[in-house]
Image (cartoon, rainbow, N blue to C red; front, side):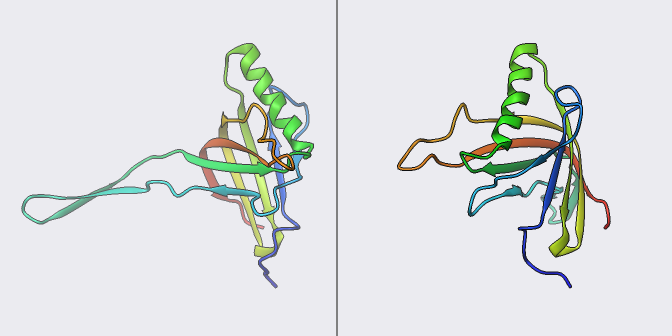
Length: 143
């Protein structure tokens, strides 16, 4: 039976230029784990004669991933940042996300880490850190 829980989700990140094995991400923030922003799928326009036209628009998909300040996955992301800064090249990523509660498996392909914090905000407690990966494609992969 499908549920709303995400506590049993598994996010596996592949970065062959950085790690020899896929990395299982963990230690998400209390209220946020990961999300993909809406993206433009099509563009609709109205002609002066009141006839609508439209067309498909290819688009990248931006995913935010939020880790607690003490998450070991911050080190995973910072290793990718380090390789990119050292080589001055992008590191291409692939990922899968298993959501057993929703009976879903998602495949993410040809991603690039596009945003990363130098470090998290330091307040009464160290704040969560948000990273952004921009994906070429995200598809359901069945379960």
